[in-house]
Length: 130
Image (cartoon, rainbow, N blue to C red):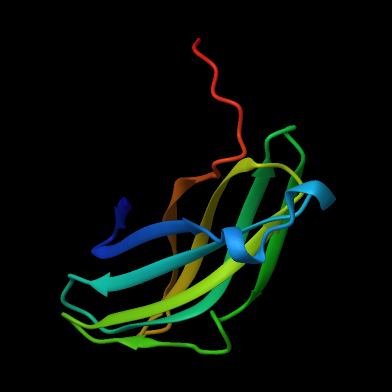
């Protein structure tokens, strides 16, 4: 698991390689990622946007930006939690993802919350010792 806290918003990520949806011979590797966003602070916030930076094993990067997550804009009161799952394919057997959520307070203040960088590893990746 990967965990990062920004301004009392804790983001926990657990990636999972989906062998049954992957096709290594065709250069298609698929992961799910399960995320929990928890408000440990004193004020209610709402998630407005997401920004993902996805890098494959060859260093190629793609960025994904959009409103909400999985079609939702969760409100998180103090102590509130929101969980969701999503996924991403890559053309290589490993990679890394990181990102940001833009949150808004009840007073209208916008701030970014860091999603921790998390490794996308599969059983098809050749292991090397550095």
